[in-house]
Structures are given as structure tokens and as C-alpha cells.
Image (cartoon, helix red, strand yellow):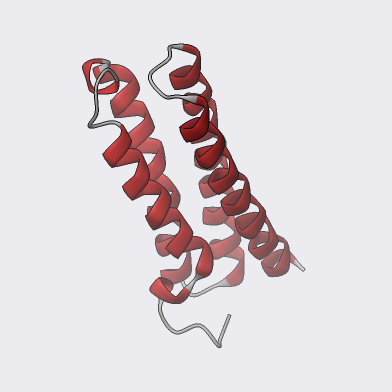
Length: 120
């Protein structure tokens, strides 16, 4: 990872940041924002994705970075699961659901690829 100098340059972090912004905007709308528990869980998981990518990178070791990417991948799954709940409760429509699932899948694929690269 010597070619990347800042965590802000990592594509996975950039995509996690965009997803986190989408989640915050989404959870600030009705009827979503009235479900405080789901809003809190979803926001916490979204923030965890980008925070763990940044923290792992700043540890300056491939093994540590891969460990924190594992945590990020778990948080990605958590966000995905919460999006299904939001859809089931009709807090979001099908178009929003599909858009988020595509973004989550892409982020998961990129993050997993980076993790595999670091472990090889």
C-alpha cells in the first residue's frame, strides 16, 4: 500500500463516505426518522465502515489494515441487513432500496478485494 499516502485516496473509503452520506440523508426523512433505534443502528454501522478503513490504513501495516477491513466488511453486512428492514417496514421504496443495495454490493466487492490483496 506504499503508493497510497492518505486514507482519503482509498476508493473503498471514498465509496463508504458516499454511502454514509446517503444513509444520513435517508434516515432524516419521514417515516424513517421516527424509528430512532433503527436510525441509530444504521448510522452507526455506516460510520463504522469508513472509520475502520481509515483507522486500519493509519496503523501502517498490511496485517492490521486487513483486520480493520474485516470489521468494515462486517459493518457493510450490517448496513445491508438494516436496509432490508427499512424496505420491509416500507420506510424506503423499491427504487431507493435497489440503489442502496447496488452501492453496498459495490463497496463490499472493493473492500473484500483490498482485504484479499493485503492478505496475499
